[in-house]
Image (cartoon, rainbow, N blue to C red; front, side, top):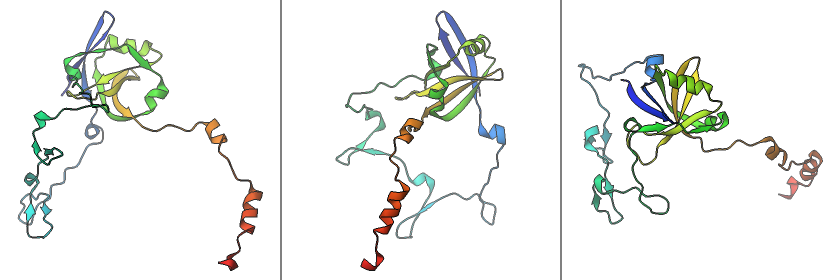
Length: 202
């Protein structure tokens, strides 16, 4: 189901509908449902260490405990940064206006791993704005309220506008100068090193 996003740029406001490009819609899918000999649905269970008990998927829940092993309710938890300062949760992007004021290069965009893609239906003037820009518009995106938004980018392809949500790849490419600075062994040195080995001494 399509949801609406609102972009603003100076005095211009663009309200558009976005719909996730689902892999299932592109390639289709197959459902496999395990059943027993009588046709009853089966479920994945866990066996206890002694082999005497079987636990269903409803038998386990995630919980939180403090350093003393005491149970802590989720509502009592507080996210903090590396300095121990409290973080504020940011609202969902569907409930706020997204500013189109930052752009990045194609190289910066390619340094990200794609998490999800949304097609923007009937982008109107927003499409023209993206096409006119030499760089890529980027903004923080939250599908739901969270402490750490993901970087999102507006990408146009053959007249269709997409919002690509990603995350930094976390690695850097080695440039040519850095490769040239690597010390390589001379073939003559390698032959000399081989001559120094005498297996009869072992």
